[in-house]
Image 1 (cartoon, rainbow, N blue to C red):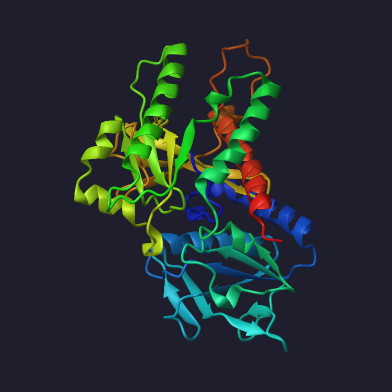
Image 2: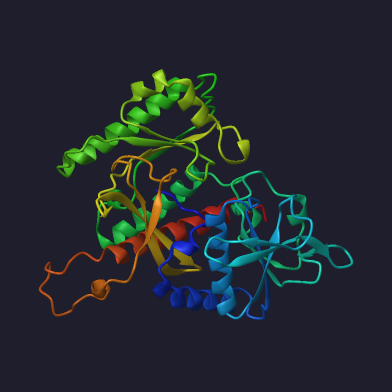
Length: 371
């Protein structure tokens, strides 16, 4: 239901998974830039979100164990000189101001650090900072057009739709099993109530298609949709809808919530996506799986858990916590077991869907690449 190209939860991975992450990072470096020694990691601007900074510390640690010399360059205007930031787990990070290097200022680095590769962990919701433009001599991963100033969920899911249908044909399954219905809606203004009728029609369309599938498979639950800002991130600009009529009676609080996303950007385009019930549970709390990848390798994952939310609600909200997905003893199939007697290997299945989503992301980025 979502693919994040700038993940913020490497610190939620199980410690047992870290050797896999290091191995994947080494393979990625060998493929993309075998001569790489120095890597500049650029995080989000905010320096007060210590959970996010623990993610950066873990990511930097993985890359260092893969053999790279890693330093952190920040886009934050508040950091004018190298600054240590203390983390809750006792570690600390050194954040340094970015600097353009070279005679023609065509390289990016730090005052005394000239990297061959730059890794972005900043989703560029506010647009491209001038200091990142016109870099012609270094590898920048992912490309600038992967940021939310360009990216749209609707483009990603159009690509995923293609990939999922082709995969489903190969393994002979109904593509709906791995691919929820969606439509997109433009020129919506929640404050001024513009585009409400079109939005209601789109919601109704997805609910009807989903209800038909529910009848086909004998699913007793009531269908619902999730309305999302097409360029939204951080769980902002998200609303669950069970009935199109709900959209007519939105109160001011709900309209405000749907109008603004990260960096204060206004919402005008939305994605209406079939809601997928979350039936996984961790200690009786609703949980949804999140799978992490480096390059083309699945390196682990975790459950996002929320004790106050139901199976049809958005779990990416204040109050959530994370439980690492550890390798179970049964993660390798028992070849001697009778067909159908082994428990389902969920982690493998999640990994397959993650790899399909990554394929879709590569298609999406190829199509939106200005070069």
